[in-house]
Length: 201
Image 1 (tube, rainbow, N blue to C red):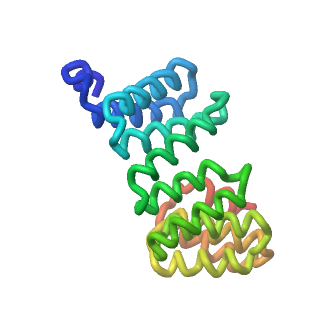
Image 2 (cartoon, rainbow, N blue to C red):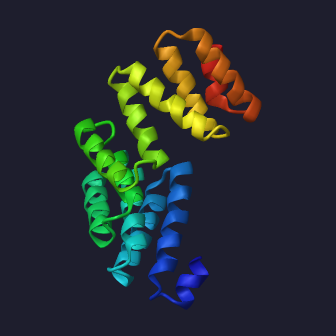
């Protein structure tokens, strides 16, 4: 990817992809240099393609995912997602990703964005999943469990949904249900470390 941007530095898409690669590298091994490379590549993607949704979405994702280590990143993430939404207002993914920026600091805004995502696509599973997680965080275990059970029913091989359902059962003092669902997680993914830890607990 670095060679591609050297050969064609005006292609926004190349910079956006390079920014995502740098971001994955930075998330695995946080260092100021790696974070800076991801930010620079994302900014260049936006500079080369100011009207391209993917460039703004990439910049937003970079800022969102480094907000714990970079001051002001949260605000830039919000602004970048808002610009992407302005360019593509019917995309439920962008609304859902913006909602993730607000979690856990502003659950009201997160819920507002998830509602907009569901207005655009009522069965968008990631929006429904994030909504269920918020319900659980707010202590509405019955609502969260019902939503997560429906998601698992519609996505039976999704390991993460099953794991989160197991956590919700555990938090709602439904220990036997939690054990049963966590065991199915391990059948699908024997090395799922979070499921092993939760099952041990």
